[in-house]
Amino acid sequence: MQRMTTAEATVESLLRHGIDQIYALPGVHNDHLFDAIHRSDGRMRVLHTRHEQTAAYMALGAAMATGRPQAFSVVPGPGMLNASAALLNAYAAGLPVLALIGQIPSDSIDRAFGHLHEIPDQLGLLRHLTKFAARIGGAAEASEVVADALHRALSGRTRPVALECAIDVWGRRGTAALADPMAPWTPPVDEDAVEQAARILGAAKHPIIVAGGGALNAGPELLALAEMLEAPVVTYRRGKGAIPTLHRLAAAVPVGYRLWKDADAVLGIGTRLHQQQSAWGTDADLKIVRIDVDPEEATRFRRPDCSIVADAAPALRELLKRLPRHNLARKPREDVAVAQAWFAERLTRQEPQMGFLRAIRAALPADGIVVEDVTQVGFVGRLAFPVDGPRRYLSCGYQDNLGWAFGAALGAQAALPERAVVSISGDGGFMYQAQELATAMRHNLPLVAIVFDDGAFGNVRRIQAEQFGNRLIACDLANPDFVKFGDSFGVATYLARDAEQLERSLGDAIAARRPALIHVPVGEMPSPWDMLVGPRVRGREDAWRPNYP
Image (tube, rainbow, N blue to C red; front, side):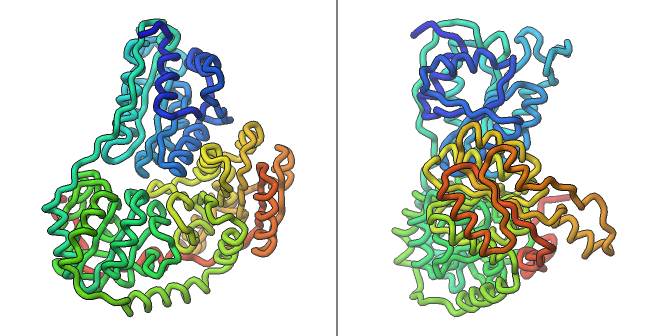
């Protein structure tokens, strides 16, 4: 037990949990928190940004790249709302982000006095965006509340959490005991369910595995199972890299779609199976097995034939023990090879995106990290950019929020300073956080930002041209001279007019180990959407929603 302020107890608790960096934009409501960080003898680093959205996106990107909890802090009201898109993204993608939010004076909360940055029921709003949200009431409870929040963030399905603290409480002294970190709770593996899964999968002649972000920590087990079943592993965005993408059984979404109609069993691991069940379709001939730590996820579309509520790695280890005695004799499948060959040929028509992606892959070290925005090159990258392992291709998941990538890439770079990190943005998305080149310079983050500039919100423009008779509205953009823009911040700047120049510029930028911007002027690019969206191939159109009115 020791005397300290609420802010000091919070900082010491974060350090006990291995959080020694905080992404933040300071303000009067959190002054005592930042003073406590300043007095922590350099044990905690603050990386301050030029906008609250970037503080939150940096925490998001750092969590995505490391798989470990990350924290950000902003003021209440406008600051919290500016950070809310990143919190929503963390919720959707299942990432352990801790938001530390200021609050108005404690005796005025929710009384509508009109205090600076006051917002009605801020805690209620935070509870819509997080797995857990609470208020720190003083020094005596601060450490326990922090420990509880992080325990909840990491237990079961990982998701963000939030803590708010009033302006007058941060600096209030009290007697505090520092709580130790609690081991995350994980559900035990149901051996009977695993045995049932082994029987279903072992008897399947054309099994498919779909792996999402919940499978990223189970790569070796996943690969062993895929080879045992000779089953393709379909990944997209959050699950990309769960097994090496160049492995013969690694399958992009278009390959999985072509195989779906003949599949007799699917194993979903740490994935919502949203696209497969809602768009591709299911029927009685398709057995569905789910492995997911979230018990609610398995039955969201239809009740599976077998559900294992557990973390992916221990569940797969148990399945690997039980499967051999039920498994059919296997050999490499011709249908998988044919689908892979079709996909490779289809990608040859996806230029110049594929050329740019090949250039990035050639210049980037094997363990380098790519963060893709909602952009034309990124759409193809989700399908075709090769990575050897998890958390090397970062995508925002189903929120698909434009402009997230540059801030998230700054966070990935800050969390993993020894790694090369590249963000891929269009001119539209990059300008959401373009001012954060200042943050890269201020904190010496050697991120390389690649901006593919077509002078438009390109995907919006294409849809208007193809589906609305070329009636174009609100899609064309006025841009700065991006090279001069980068120069004005002091970052290394490059102009690359083709894939060869991009590869050379990216190689030079990575070698220089300083913040960099590469401007790539482009024209209209061919659409990849025929590879991503296709007609239903199984079941009735309404078969996935039997319980809906």
